[in-house]
Image (cartoon, rainbow, N blue to C red):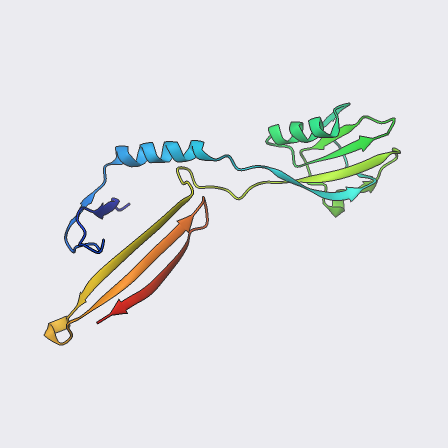
Length: 176
């Protein structure tokens, strides 16, 4: 892996001066990563995938309210889906770890009442140590190969990321 570096000196316009750079030490990035991890916790969401159905063999059964049932599924890493039963003589919460309650697992429920099936939607995976960040850099290159061309070219690079994936743009800002 290559070491991270940054400009140690810039010109009056904030542009990097060639050769004026240094390596950042690992301790700096360790603290930055730690702070970024605490900054934001991605939220689990749910999509309603059925009504009046159950989804096979449940892993959890209770008389929990719909909100408690959802919370149980959120807190249980293995939970993939849950079904709630309101105004029903049946248990009010079933949760599933073997399937996500997609169409192939759904069967008409024998219970009465308002029955709703929900699939857990996990947030996009974040890379460890990454945090929401925007970076912009502008570089001016001396474009004179063998003395034939003395124009300077200014290139801008900007990147924004919050976890994965990284999006970036590169554009030529100007030239003499």
